Length: 66
Image 1 (cartoon, rainbow, N blue to C red):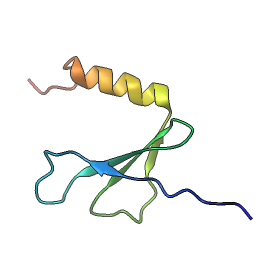
Image 2 (cartoon, rainbow, N blue to C red):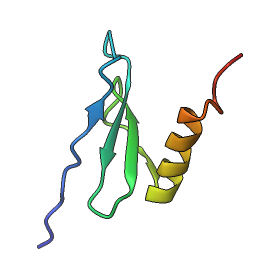
Image 3 (cartoon, helix red, strand yellow):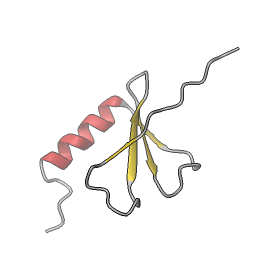
């Protein structure tokens, strides 16, 4: 019998009315991203490198709308 690990999702402290994205770091380092309004839908999964690159891009302003 295999044990299924349930990810522990977190949401931003900037989340107000509950319409937020949630992230969970998996044991292998991958990151799941889901919509807090529809947590039963499958999450988007990113490798640790993909997530790191995304976060660095956000911090560098690559996704800012001018």
